[in-house]
Amino acid sequence: MTPDYKDIATFTTAIQEIFPKLMHYLEAEEIRELTGLGITPGQVNALLILFMHDDLTMGELSTEIYLAESAATRLVDRLVKMNLVKRKGDDKDRRVVRVYLTSYGRQLANLVFQRRSLRFRNLAERISPDEREMLIVSIQAVLRVFEEFDHQSTPLPQLEE
Image (cartoon, rainbow, N blue to C red):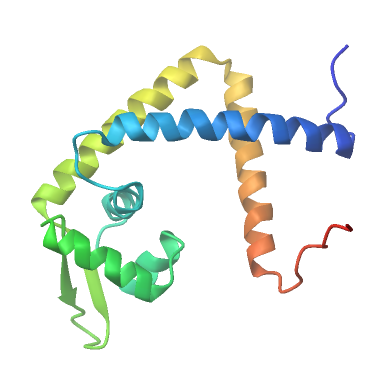
């Protein structure tokens, strides 16, 4: 008998079983993907954001990588020292600092992007077109709700002891 995932308790139990396994696989892939590159997952995330949306302001980058602007600045400082990104002033507003990939940073981001594309292509080839569509729609729903949680000022209910 197929579980009834429309039931909240059944859904909650299933998610709690699935997520640790999913995170394990994703983290293991990330470790394999970054081995030998001398870069952290947070740094590669910033590179990939800049690879897809080059020439962002520090504020835009910090929003995209979910870090406070001060933490994003420290991360960019490390990437500048590694010759992966450069900063430049904005042509229209001297207060604005823009970040963009160096040639080396673009090559490294492209390598990681290609590795991830291959991994997701392999996944896509092993599931049906309907499953691919359901997966994307479901992940988008999860992200939407998590973003709603982030914007709510109401804390989650506390567990009773």
